[in-house]
Length: 367
Image (cartoon, rainbow, N blue to C red; front, side, top):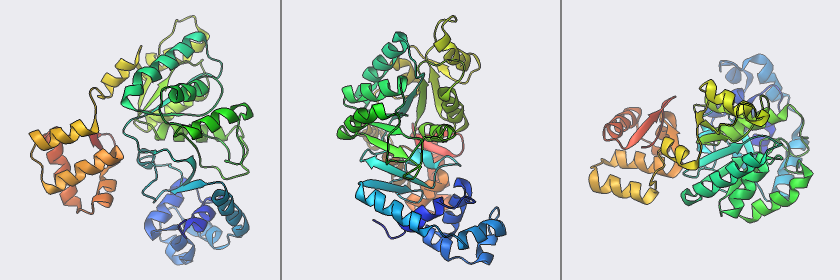
């Protein structure tokens, strides 16, 4: 395990350092250890840090707790994913409030080609069950990664359906990895881990599933995904929060409609009515909207090689987008080691050749 991990954990234990400030510090100083080594003047030069936060870093005393967390993750085969790590989920990296540190139990690649979040009511109807099971069954040929929150209802159905169809699935938790909530889903969680799935959280061990942690968790569900599907929900609840967050992250949001008299479809109908979700009735609607038809990495490579002449810089950018799904211009600069002008010219050329698609926020993906 990398030596910087103790400082990465410690940085997340400073109450005055939130995700945005922490990311600013790490991006400026290069790693977490360097943040702790920086003097007050160096820290205060950064806009938004100030003396209060600088003193909080220098006066940090909870090293014992950070060391306990490190021992816990080492003893339980948990992988820490720091925001500067190459294994950090790239889609989440595009979110301004992405967690500094994630804890992953399991070996699922969080940078799969296609990632969907499936969310909905904890008290689903038979209609919701049928929709969830058929949606995931029909998406199985695309080998999508299924994200949800391991809660009762639609969440659990999504995870179970993914396992039934040989798909990896990730449960994002609102607590630490030393326990599982709800406890009744311990067996489901174990089955997920046995079938290429993972448990993921930004909360350290000992963190309880307090009410305010769930909206925090929901932003990770939204940020990890290409699209969020709301299967069935009433007029309030966590699914609507996830949909709202996904819209804020420029993710595609879909909802299944229901009868106007059905309480558990009111939330979905409201999302559709307010243009906060696209209406779908089956998986093929989502596939067409996302342009996943006949999608295959091998086919994409062949089309690029056989029908379009690419420069070396363009090939490098294309390969990065194939490997990582979608990236911002800054991330393409970072990973490609090309100059700003080379990346800008390459992206413009690839857009004109219809090889890539520009998304809001200067983010790009394979067309």
